[in-house]
Image 1 (cartoon, rainbow, N blue to C red):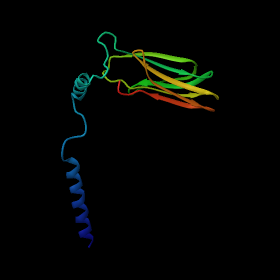
Image 2: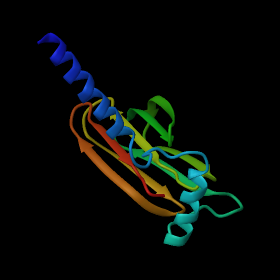
Image 3: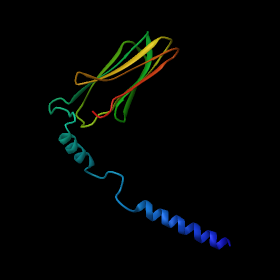
Image 4: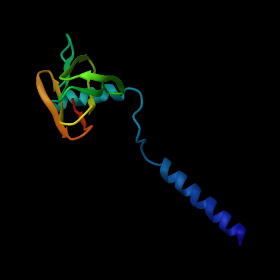
Length: 141
C-alpha cells in the first residue's frame, strides 16, 4: 500500500512539473525593456526627453522633523531627522521610473508627501497623529 501512495505521489508531482513548465514563460528575457519602451511610445505614455531626462521632485512637509526614506525604482536612500519641509530633486533617463517616499514624523501632527514629475503633481498623501507614517509611490511614469 505504501508503494501505491509513493507511486501516486511521484505521478502527481511529475504532472504538476509538466503543467508548470508548459506554455510561454511568464518572465521577461533579454530585450524586454526595449520592447516595453516601444510599447510605451505607441501607447502615448510619457517618456523622458533626450536632453536631461525626467525631473522628479520629492517633498515632505509637516511639523519639525521626520525620518525620510526615498528613491527611484530599487535605489533607496534615507534622511534621518530631516528638517521639514524637506525636498529632493532627482533626474532619470530611465523609460519607466517609480519614485517612492516613506516618512515618519518625530512627534505629533500632520505629515504630507508629494511627488512631482516634469512639473506635474502625480502623487500626494497625508497622515496624522503621534509618530505618523506617510507613503507616496508614483507608478506608470
